[in-house]
Amino acid sequence: MNRQAQGVVMLLLGGAILKASLTDMYLRYVKAGLQPFLIGAGALLVIAAVMTLWYDLRHGTTVDTECADHPESVGAGRGGLAHDHGHDHADSGPGGGHGDHDHGGDGHGHGAHREPRVGWLLILPVLGLLLVAPPALGSYAAGQAGSALSAQQVSDFPALPDGDPAEISVLDYATRAIFDKGLSIGDRRVRVSGFLSDNSDGGQLLTRMILSCCAADARPIKVGMSGSVPTGLPADSWVEITGKYTEQQGADPVNGESIPFIEVLEWRAIQAPAEQYE
Image (cartoon, rainbow, N blue to C red; front, side, top):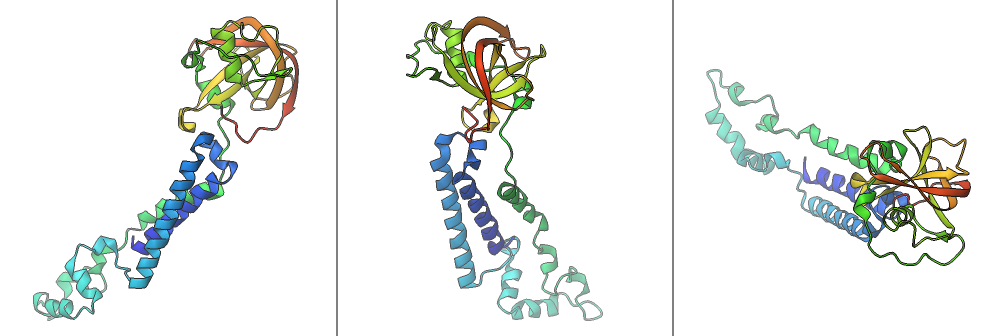
């Protein structure tokens, strides 16, 4: 693949990263705090690609990099006089031709060093990033992994935020319910939101995926529901729940971790938020 082609691929890749990082698309891959780093990486790729293309077009350097280590290729690029002259003596057979060293190419030995077309496959993931926006991980991924609550232990819980109900995350509620036995919640009403995932007992769980860095390490936080639970909604539907702490607990069938419950007082269906990971 010559320098111009490499520059084009790099330009497309940098543009794809910038497009994702300057919109909400990047939130489906990484945590929100990594946005500045993505923008910087995309900008550097675009700058490097532009400089590569500018240098190549200015100096007319379109020599195949696969042939850069072969002196005969450089000789051919300068007019090929010495190259052809050498072949007149070294390659002449009994018939005076060049049949033994033609290599099926263009007469200058380039046939054996053609640009590998497989290199253009590098552009496929770039086009995929530009044209396709994959959904965030949902109920299927949550059902295949055990609850990650044991890795989120906190020894000292701050007071709940002001307001009635207090708006907290699924992770915040789950850690308070398991490791603080609900003491820091008390009789306060809380509001949490997440998507529904199927439970092994036939019910549904309120679920949220948490990230350490990117979607590759996403793990689910699951909360069971009692009381006025959501009905008539399929898995992956997003709901907002207002409820209270309950001592009821269950066990995750995947890894045996404890699953806290929330007593649902009221609920409503909502649209999936832009930032679906916690």
